Amino acid sequence: MNFRNILLLIVLSTSNILFAQTTDKKGKIVIKTKVNCNHCKICETCGQKFETDLYYVKGIKIVEYNELDTTIIIHYNTKKTNPDLIRAEISKLGYSADNVPADSIAVNKLDKCCRRE
Image (tube, rainbow, N blue to C red; front, side):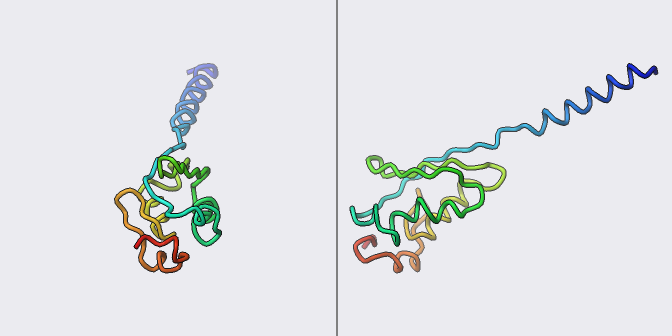
């Protein structure tokens, strides 16, 4: 083999490795939940947890609460988290997340008007 063929072989094998690693890491999930009262939407101990505490979860990039649909839209890095972990984190804030019930200890930490009773 001459030098040109060896160089071509190296370039082709390197490009395959690089292209294999460019998988899409962006995920988006819409989770059904509910904030119970208007106070909760602005209260730091309740509704604003979606926009503050969830950002501390590794891999979560954008959190949006849709009041009309009572959903949370979350954009995340699929290499760092997944929908089940995100639902569990929302549960730990005291809110249900799709079919995952709210953590009872976290619910008791919410203001009384924010609890689902």
